[in-house]
Length: 263
Image (cartoon, rainbow, N blue to C red; front, top):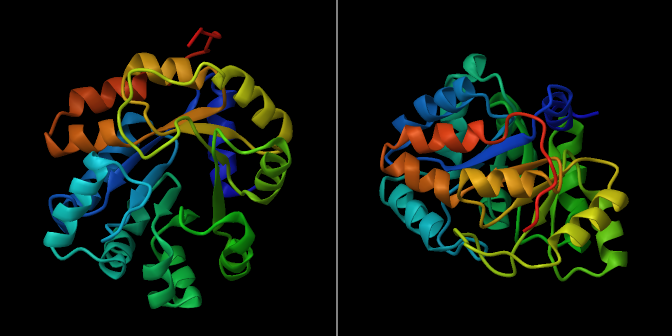
């Protein structure tokens, strides 16, 4: 069992759902990365998804895209983020999952990137523009350094593809809950319960819901379907506005035994 999966399983044993907040690294400057991560740890998150700003973020909605633009304007790069993480590695107590696109990783060099991730406490990576068919390249480079390659599965994936994605994913399966890009949603598809039941049956590792989850109620509702949630845009907005009460409320909603709820 990998470090990332173990953290999710530990949340389950404690009677909670896994909660992974997404942050845009360097939104507000590189100096914000350390206090943000340490604060989220104190709030009891399971892991932290560290987004790397990119000029063409195909999976990101307007909130995260604007955060990325602010970070890029502040001179934030993949190299600088990993160096910053390394500078306070001994204080990091939860697994970090880097969310990036393939071009920065390729430019960095796969082995050099893997070594920098290890130095910075990174336990997993999400690369939305690398499809399942090409993902072996990442696993071959990162697995020797015990870094998981997390795969995303969409609502439109047929059963046979779901099975292949579940078999290839490491750490957890990232179940996208909407058809489209990231961002807050008020409504979700009617067939999510059935979709998640199929995913959990096919997957030997935890299944977490992500995209569109933006309120404590949605954290509870989506958490009831799988093993936990990833919350992005709502966290990014709250951090940008220095609204830690909202962040704390979102994290707190993942605590406690969940009952099934109707979407």
